[in-house]
Image (cartoon, rainbow, N blue to C red):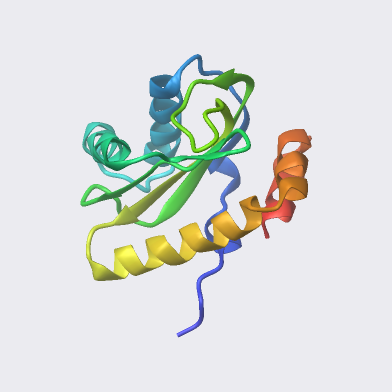
Length: 152
């Protein structure tokens, strides 16, 4: 079985580089709505509840103004990631106690296969986001295509 690459689940309709959100709830709500509109989740409310359950388990802010909220849910029809970038910094629990402005919301289906995929994709993304230069390029990207290229 061929390894899944993060770029294989990057979809233009799931990337918003001008996300208008004033707080964590608005970020999550916007990203979940994008997933729903793209047909990747069956229930906005169901998946949102699962994201908040995961948020209660621990910090999803990686630091360097990046947060990776995620949810494993029966409401996910297909694994995906919705990405948002805000102009303003948003308060988010993070390891460096700094707010975030780059958000990567992962959605994976329940079950062992979903869990394995989730870990692989999170690991790939975390590796990319450990590079300060890549994060800076993601913050400055002008187009979705340019943004995706830095993650590929």
